[in-house]
Image 1 (cartoon, rainbow, N blue to C red):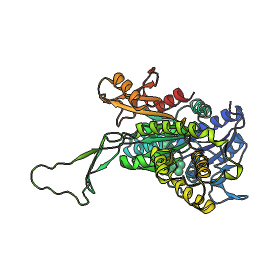
Image 2: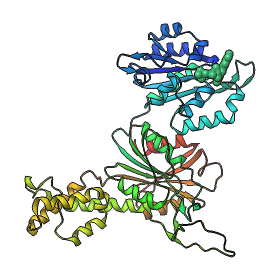
Image 3: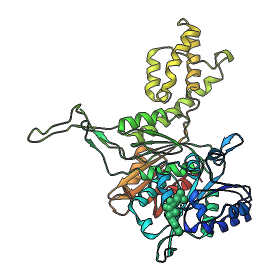
Length: 475
Ligand SMILES: Cc1cc2nc3c(=O)[nH]c(=O)nc-3n(C[C@H](O)[C@H](O)[C@H](O)COP(=O)(O)O)c2cc1C
């Protein structure tokens, strides 16, 4: 099952450390190469000699032995997965705060592939507020966690905190390896979070969206092999690209600038419908009586990118027949369109907006090569060729997925919305329920496609819901 997989096990100073000897045997029996890194404290619970003998490899503990050409913490990252078991409260705290004061921690910090954390500790330690906060941080950062079980603990009491059985850890590892890479080679843009529309330097209008659903989608898309760009209203530490755009206008700009070459756009951000027309430069003071804020409508980003797609498809269709008329010498040149009006029309139609960063070279290159005297016919041909090249990496076939949060008539409203916006899928969730949706760790959704077929995904963690949504759309 795990033939030729390179598994790195990290053992910390917990009483359950001895159980990892059996985990090593399970991995080895199933064909994996196993290396072990331990914290110095772990060696109070299990010996280097045992781990070395079972794994058939050297056991790593020190930070300062240079293995041939690379420091150990970098050499160890060349593994397919890092399983930290048992993970002590101490190590969990350090991992969650980027502390690297031993080899196991430095390795985890530099590790770009999946990390599985298997906590084990006394019940009160597990329930400790800071330990729980650290666990949340790790989960949010994309670490996989195998939650501890309830049972008899080494400290002599029954309670939660017991490390999951090594068979469970083995199964979880197999499941992590079998994560289908259905998005390998795909470029996905995802938006997340509730926008914050400024009133003055310290106040803003926002909504209850936590961004958890969008982040879960981005994490899962990444694990499924996608090249992910997350545009969110707050920053996150992730192994994929993150662009922070607090307001609707900033988000609109970032989405358009990053649409190039994407295969799919998932708009899960809760974008405010309105913003304050005149944001005060100074903090607004009480003036006695009422304060009126004039709100103006924000752009409908979802609708706009669906429209861009239509513009682009019709443009590509229009220029395709002209491409064959170009001579070799005319290709590969970004040129100036034959008149300003035409250029502006193209620009405003959305085509060139998608490629706005290419626009400045577009004009300069033409002038340099042909001057301004080129005849109309030549320019026209150049123009058509140039435009299609400018947009050659922009696909007109990207899948657009929208979200719709409704407090009443969920399905009916969602059906109307998907038709109005023109997207391929709409994920509808009921925000009138307190147990799911906004700000919750769980959700329950309906996936509606453009033919108005409906798929219900029952209540589950946002992680699992995100996985199901991506599988439904891409499998
Ligand atoms: C006998 C004994 C058992 C322990 N068991 C655990 C445990 O199960 N989980 C835990 O988080 N800490 C446990 N500790 C405390 C850790 O060893 C201690 O916090 C240590 O600093 C962990 O270091 P490390 O995370 O660098 O390995 C135990 C300590 C002792 C003496």
